[in-house]
Image (tube, rainbow, N blue to C red; front, side, top):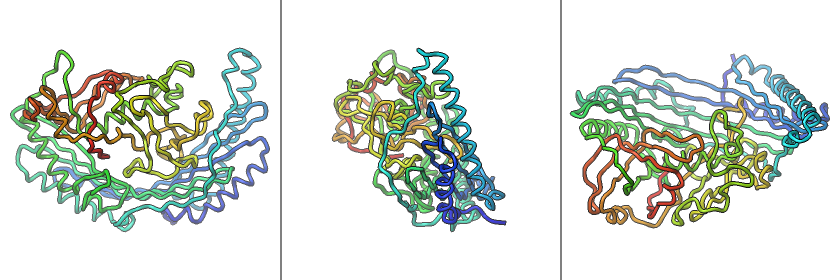
Length: 488
């Protein structure tokens, strides 16, 4: 039986482009098509308390098609499939099936759109022809980066390494009640082609490790988990990462430190809530989750345009075309934020899933709201330039506008100098749980550790603390930005 490997794309990508051309010739109502094809190879294991619970390999194969078609109106049709090994002998026929399904859906959408515009002349004006903002056409191949090839690692090798770490954590003492250690390393290859002539072949190496610890102490039981990871090979697990921007220890050291922290927190008192505002200093790990939740998500333009309202919420930055925050002050002049797919880590890519070159998108520049992440469709609505933010978790599903790596821009202040200016406040280290309003206008985000600051000195450790704030108010009150940007 044939095996699913990333080399499959080498055998079919020319045929995919040819199929697309022939399909358009046979169906003159088509205005545009694109095809996404993805193959992945994954190896992983996890252990509990020094015993293997799982090790194995997994393979993924999926395709997705978008067609814009119609006579009186232009509408989209989407179709996607998750495939298996039985599909390997007739991949071209499967892609033709996807094209035809998407085409029929587009025609149906276009027909009903035209009919609705005729029946409801005033309301029907809100139904518009689907347009894609123009982009530069690229034909490119992007290889994966790694030292130790994920494809050359066996599940047993992973399991042996992970089991040894888990046994070591178990031996740390009776206060460590439970541990789970896991790791995965994979290759994912994506091929995208469009009727405009774009053809992008991108391969990614993705490796991560996780440690989950439960420990007891005089203050009760604490449980904490955290990850290390990068778009690299197995070296991430055995060696860690040494920048730029991503700094993590190897999984063994990382897991031991997390276990020690969990025991320490099980012996720390809970932080009592405060009646009013307090001064806080937040570390880069905590800031990673804050940036993700109150900067990244509300700056996804499909969310802002109410396309995700029923299942993902809206954005306080955009009420409607006439009433929004574009060009207005939403943060301290000291603060700038952006999303940038050229940065390293899981958010890194060269092209998004409609062949647009990924670009650095400044959301806030010196306190002024500037720009959303967009797709070609949403860029056309706002008459903006596409910035390459249209991504999907699998080729079989419709992409969404999603953040790449979203950060607070590096500042100029030294951490110790910032702390020295605080008479009474708290230093928040690490993140745990977010709770965010539907439009991201306010939040509560807890941290792993909270240290009291008195007279410029870090002191007592507390557990179970966090920040509750209005998003704009929080951003407007920033009065120092550190120079220690890190990506998690």
